[in-house]
Structures are given as C-alpha cells and as structure tokens.
Length: 423
Image 1 (cartoon, rainbow, N blue to C red):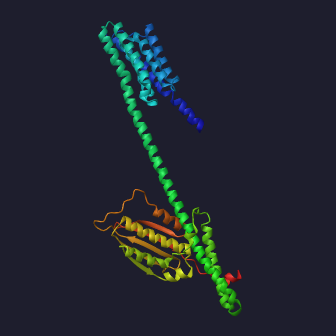
Image 2: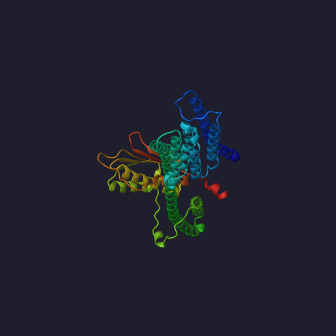
C-alpha cells in the first residue's frame, strides 16, 4: 500500500511538467500554422526551418527543468526564464515560452514565501523582459517600444502569477493555521475534561475514606458487643455477626471499585477530623438549604426511601453519588436558570432501583444566567459517579425549555442470612 502511494506521488510530480511541455509544443505548432496563413504575423518560423526545431528543443528543455528541479523552485524559475531570450527566434510567437515561466513562478511562490523569492522573481522578470525586447528589436521595432513590451511581458509573465500564487499560499496557510488552532483547542478541552475527571475521582476517594472510617467504627463497636452477647444471647450475637459481615462486604466492594483512584498527597489529618456520610436521607436537608438560599425548590419522595437508606440496600457510595448529583443539579439550576422553579423527586416504589430526578424550568423573567469564563464540568462528575456505582444517569433539555437530570440507583437484593452463615 505504501509503495503504491509513493509510486503515485512520483508519477504526479511529472504530470505538470509533461502537461506544460505538451501545451508549449502545441502552441508552437499552432503559431507556425497561423503564421503560414496570416501574413501579419511576424518572424514565426515554419517546421522546415532550423529555428523551429531549436525552439522545440528549448521548450522541451524548459519542461525537463520543471521536472528535474522540482525540489529547488528558485533554480527552476531562473533556468526556465533563461529559455525566453533563447526563443527570440520565434518572433511574435515568443509568448509560448512564457507557459513554463508562469508554472515555475506559481510553483516557487506556493512553496516559498514571496519575500524569500524576491531576487529570483526580479531576475526571472528581467530575463523575460530581455527576451521580449530582443525579439521586438529583431523584428524592427523602436527602442522604447521594445523596452515597454519587455517590461510589460516581464510584469505579466512573472508578477501576475506570483501575485495569484501568493494569495493561494496565504489562504492555504490560513486554513492550516485554523486547523492547528482547532486541534489545539480540542486538545486543551480534552485536557481540562481529564483534569476534571481526575479531580472528581480524587474527591470520591476522599469521601470513601470518610465512609470507610464511619462504617469501620461501627463494625468495631458491634464486634465489641458481640463479645459480651455470645454467652448470654447467642441469637443476638449471630444476628450481629451477620450485620458485621454485610457491612464489611459492602465496604470491600466499594473499596474494590475505587482502588485505582488517586489521592492528593497533601491531605492533612485535620481533613479527617469530622466524618459526615451523606445519604439519601440528607437530600431533604439539601433541598431545605437551597430553599433558604432563595431557590424555589420542592421535594417529593415516594416509597420507602428512608428504610432503603438505613437498611444498606443502597450502598453508602451509591447514596453519596445520588446526594452529589442532586447537589450539582441544584447548583447548575441556580447558575444557569436563576429564579426557575425546581422539583426534586426521590422515588423508591420500584423495588429494584431508586429514581432521583431534578427538574428545573426556564429562568425567571429578567434574570440573567451567571456567566463564567471557564467551562463547567459538573456533568462529567455526575457521569463518573454514576458509572462507578453502577447507576444510570440521563440528562437533557425538557419540552418547556428547562433541564432534567435523572439518576437510577440500583437496589441490592436482600440476601438470606442462613445462606450467608452456611456458605
């Protein structure tokens, strides 16, 4: 495949020089034919004249120079322009030699900046002017007429193609710069998203530390009680052992899910002095705080939400994820839809999941959303928490122009204590 593409690239480099040579030869043949039928055409030799074959050799040499010096555009331009004075034998048909000059000029300007080619462009224009002026003098024209014709042909044959090619090169560079800018912006946006993800994972790792400290403290208290119950209340001790195993299993599962998360190296002991575990039961307090801050928020609960939160059927990490999603959704509503009515719904009627929905309407009339120079990554954090806990997250605009965030948290099926004991 690579060899085939390389072969096509080598073949393409010969297309333009070959087409230029064919066009120049065709124009030379057409000029001879016209000169044979039109007496007004001056100094054009026929095919039976040695001058015609000399011109043919010069035109073919110009095409060969374009092909052989394609990697050296300045040398190719000067070499091709040198052929124009050599074509003075063509009389009025000397313009056929400008085909290669136009191609060489455009190729050089596209490949190099015009400022770096200034000397080569001036030299090529001078060679063209000399060739045209010599032809005019050979045909009997006056000195000023020959000078004017030479300058005009030099400016037209070199200056105009250089101008057009510089416009093409500038447009190409602008498109390339725009593409690089877009690519750089995409890389920067991806880097910011990655930073937000890592920051969120670090926060979740710290929160898991608090959860582990809380539950392990409870396990320690329960095991101390088991030591006193084992002789006087064997049934109660057996139940306490089952509860310890249940909490330990849940904690190990959450630790296994978060084992790859990073922790900040500058964490201090003071950060762990107070342990607070946010649960589904804390959503009511969260809504109350938002209402006290001026938001129009309502809360509706359905089903045994408190029972599921207390029983451990919804793991501590999943409850924390639900709490954080409600917190972030209310913060986003206050930021992007100030004054809008918000409704928080926690529905536990389905025994297999708890549905947490936060819906806000359109901003109040006259209220302007808070603008920030940096993009937010709240949805990124929500998605990370949902994936980590096996929950399902959905969000998007509503039909009335508001916004809706929905989280479905799975509920663990109750296990049989006897089965745990015999396993």
